[in-house]
Length: 103
Image (cartoon, rainbow, N blue to C red; front, side, top):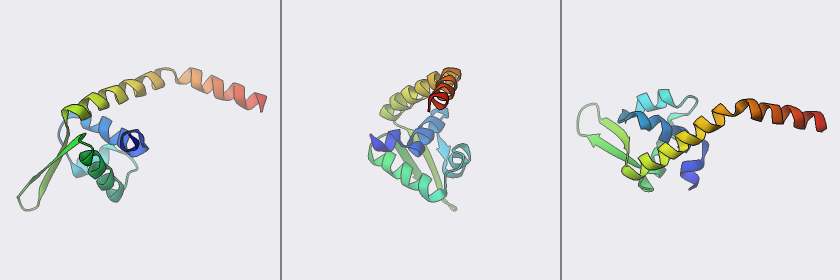
């Protein structure tokens, strides 16, 4: 659960909703993530059965990542949660302002 709900796991999973992606393209989509952190995140998600890593024996190596069926189901739910939160940001900002006034 922590691999999916962590900052980088959520962003990587949602980025993969667009389809099969190479490592560097995925790194560009997940703004702010280092190569090392993306690699660790993808390995954890692959280990959990959420991401499929496909390496082709070419020079240079051609590695692509995609969501498994389980991964797609999870990523769809994460995306819906992100959409909900983004659509309700005015309420969140109003709550923060109200809280700051009280404290």
